[in-house]
View 1: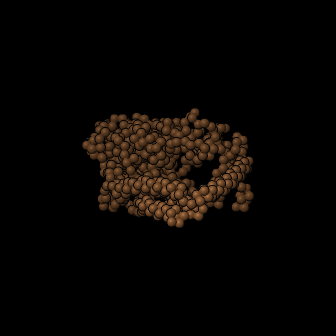
View 2 (view 1 turned 60 degrees about the vertical axis):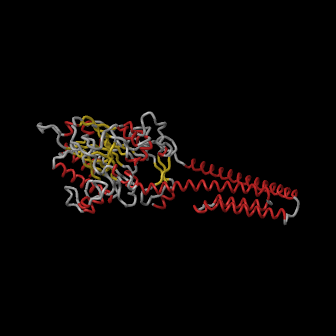
View 3 (view 1 turned 90 degrees about the vertical axis):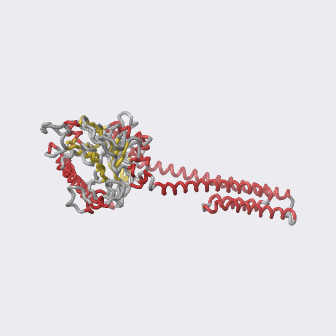
Length: 561
């Protein structure tokens, strides 16, 4: 069997890129597919993003209401199966859990069960419940139990070096997660952990690693898990390819790092536990050695492929649009994995999700469909009403003086531009008919009992002279608007030319720089600066970014300094 992990950087964009969820999953050609950073809330779990023929899915969505955390992170595990019931396939889990602390509501299924809220996971009894709830509320883990092994699909927190709060969160996340692993291994369970750890373990896993790179506390923690450091886990990719350099899985979207493969390896698969062979000497036998056939990075999923980039110029990432995630998938193939006992899909499967199954969808979809039907009716009524008014307007203009024609045009314009209520659409037709009848009656009275002063010829002359006057005014107005448009266009061209002439050129290539703005909070926040426009790459490569930097306004810099 084959397991793949992929940070999709938004599930909906990847589905759109491939045409459907089924096509996206099939492109990864794996039995178990673990996706991270889905960016879906629980309310957005609909059939088009969670259901694909032949796959069972298990989601974890962010539940945090913290600013900047809503619609963020999220993981999902898709299992390719022939049958979701009475199946003995290893790919179909016997149990599934959202999060890893045990304190999330409905963490083991979509139907409420009181013990799910109260019970902490085994090994986590000593932790405060609020702390555990905070760790699991960001939708960063789904656990699936496949009988022979327990699979953790995780999306590790990112923490900037100067963000003390997120660093503390990341430390707690991995500390508690490791406690859960330890508890399972004490029971003799085999563990596979896959996902985006947001940790590059060693210097070989980072493009610009400095001399102190490996001293980071998270990198030290990751390496402490591994067998070579006395731990119980194998870093599967590195164990299979110990000397492979520039094997990266993530690249910066802001600097075009993919063009020169200037990235880091932060997407991992690690395993721990004994092999499945019976009556074997445990010496030299473990799950990795006996069952892991291969592991590699699926570089064909990279957005930027060798030979396809039109230019070395990155242009600040704005003029070159590359479709796809900023990560590449990693896969592991296993061998000699026997079937397990017959079982059904766990209750956490999204086939039981109310929005997908239809219990909750009934009310929501009914209202949305009813609303759309009413909107269509309103549009039809509005078109009918407008057509009736136009016909009426033509008839009246042919029979009435020019003043009444102008008045009718004003009413028509007002009717078209104003936003009408639902009730007004249904009343507009009858109202228009009443107005038409009253106006027709008035006209007939004017023509018979109290005729309009002057002859019919005089009226036509008056109409013609007013039309000529209106045409002159219209021509003058159009001429004025054209002059203003040309003036604005020439002024904008002048501003653009000035801006282009003020853009500095980088010293490394003699090319115009790109401007950027400081977004990070601090004394320079909001300030504009110029940098080399080329993609980031190794300093030894003359085609890569030369590192040129210049503030856009030196006077502001002196004032702030």
